Length: 251
Image (cartoon, rainbow, N blue to C red; front, side, top):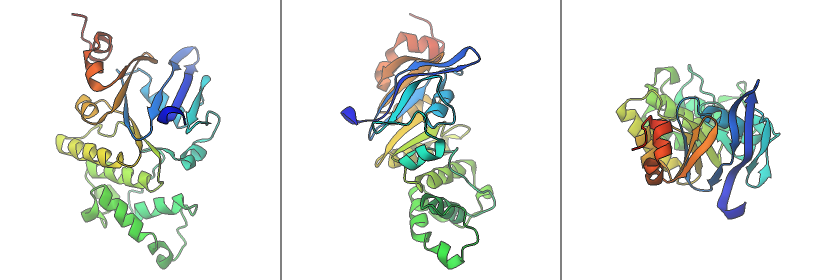
């Protein structure tokens, strides 16, 4: 890994029947940072995420993770390397308890995925680590709750817990605070900060106050291209960003 870069793209491009959704994106994410990907609707953020986690194959360009070319790898193989996307790869079963959901994720991480026929005693060996993860995401008092009964923000916390069970080095979060009220937004933002203490986070996020509070570095996309990159202060001062992202014209 050169210069602490853990995830990198080179000329990353995706075309759909002549429409260029992502165009020559060169992204560099440093180990141990929170890196935000922002931009107006249709900027290419989700497509970029889908390319990074291999749900889409690029038209051209390369994706490097820890210096390894992962461009042609399958999503499951990329996840095993430690590049994991929350809310997509994590599976939350609505009619199982919080503890059972995290326990299943731990089974999967150890190559024993979805072995429902195993004895209760065999499954209970995952309990100590599952309870640690549940506490880490602020769900200790909800361990016995059925997932479908959780408030929305708590469900998101459970999804993060099941993703953390896979022990990712880089965690990709796709709009982690979408649809949340103020209290849940604050709770999830604090959770992201705790999670990032021991790993790298790349997130797509529309809430600029969350981006400002959490991000070490921000990449702004518009029309599939990188418009600007830097810390929040420099991004907020950038007239082109204000025009493209906030709809504010030049002074």
